Amino acid sequence: MRGAFALLGVLWLLLPAVARGGDVKALDTENGFRNVRFGTTLDALDGLQLLTESGAAGTQLYIRPDESLELGDARLDGVTYAFFRERLYFVTIFTSGQRNTQAVLARFRQSYGPGAAVAGNAVEFVWQGSRVLLHFREDAATGVGMAVLTSLPMDAQVKAAGAPAPADAAP
Image (cartoon, rainbow, N blue to C red; front, side, top):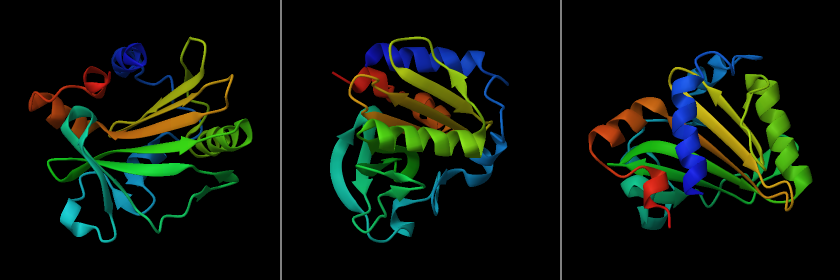
């Protein structure tokens, strides 16, 4: 896992326009997930349930118990919201089963274009706007998928604060 996040860091530097398929600008326009925008303060959101105060990069992870676990044609296993210093930093979407995971990928491609493929054993793509980075990964053997939408301005704040990167915090 650590290698995947290290590779993701390198890709941030190398992907200026590669992922500009359909409309990667929509990532920046949305600037979050569903009706929650990156940088939103924790106290501005109702109905969050704390999962852990010791998430990656010094974050606190929350779920929305009443959240719809549908995304297009996909059934999600869960969505977590990570806050750094009480501001929304990244959102992680989890899926299982190839049908659900591929449906999420199809949704991203429809919304943001084809994405930039990441070499490796997994099905992996990255879309980068100027404000938001989307990283999608599917384990081809199991169909388990994960997508992470990250605020690039918040990421810069985390790094400036000296917090460990999510890869550094992982076992």
